[in-house]
Length: 153
Length: 101
Image (cartoon, rainbow over all chains, first blue to last red; front, side, top):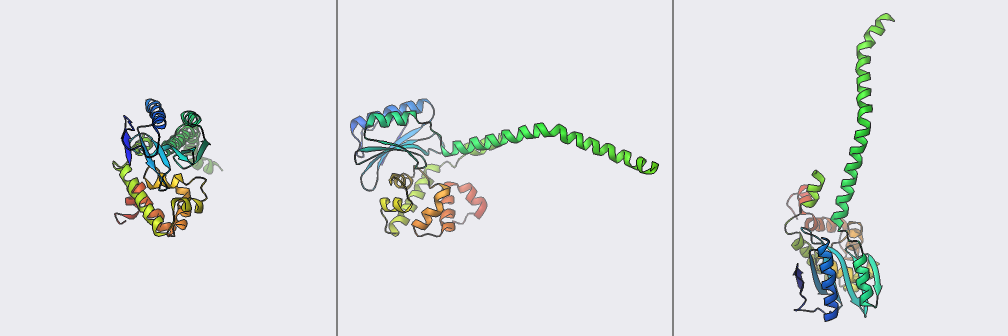
């Protein structure tokens, strides 16, 4: 197993990847790190010996946000959930697909959903607060006036 | 913001716990006599590479497919999910079940 933090130099175990492929991964990793979308990467092998490259998201989760595997000479690009992004026989094309992909870690998505929910709730509260306050005020007036109205009646 | 603080915080050894989960899953798979390819076929995955991603600890079993994984590995879904939760979200696991694993 090879895990490289911040300065990926795939010099040791190649885990089935060629030097050209490793260079491409380094370029991809550098670009993603620069954009704050990745903080580590790793190269592995499946149990049947197919090479895999993992791009890991930001700390503290370091969860896989993108993986590239080579199966029978074809590059398979997947997201962190195993969702298929693309498959191609061309390394350049695989790198282009991987570079274009918008990366979102699972926790990032959850955090965005929570933030959106809170923003929505705040918006609703902001809009309904004056109406509720008015209703409360009206109820207070009624409680004061009702005994007098009842007496007159 | 409370929510952001919660999600920014993570167990310091989240990576290690995911690796532990991966090892446990691999153990279950081997006990079930399945290869990564066979497990992927049972889960109807297009590629078997995701199994490797999860077993090496870089990825995790998605919540929505935990039941399918459990059945494919011959485990009881509730126990399987509970065990995975202890790896993937130990804080929540502790709140729900105490320290028992």
